[in-house]
Image (cartoon, rainbow, N blue to C red; front, side, top):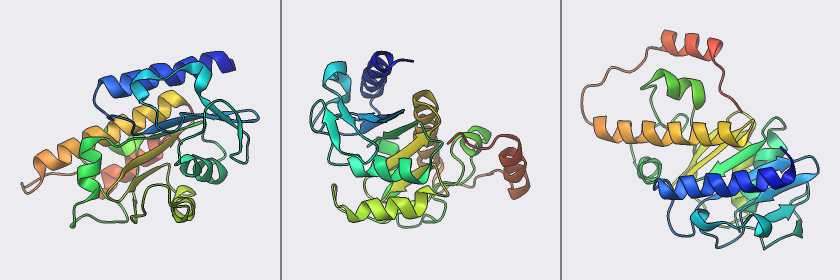
Length: 212
């Protein structure tokens, strides 16, 4: 895709995300890597009504080149791109069920969600819980870097998921899988549950490594 097509794809994705209730108001952000930088949704923007001509265009250091001012969470995206050279897009959502799981006290911070389905293991893999930092706190960038080298999906405590993919479609697919698994986890919470076994998980990860 050329840059104009990428800009339109970001806006179409934002409208889809917002229309299906995966984010709300002026929350969440989307970025796509370019050859000489990346495109990002602007600060204070509603993902349901993005303008392709007003997207923030940043260089490979995260400095604004053109367009509106970027979201204050731009450093999250830069940290992921720095640590994951193969990632072509990042989606950050405030999706309800994922956020709900991020505030539970009894989850494993090294791997928040259990292996409920094969597609969660295939598309998300392990999901670490990143400690809480206030929105826009630059210290969160270092925390993201610490996790991003080994994980393409992370859950920010009391905040929401950050998911990278080789393309925008792959990042969105994984983010949606994470949200649906979080919803299933909450529906099943407190009930006897048959999760995939470690052997089944290992087999899935060998056959279908998550797309980062």
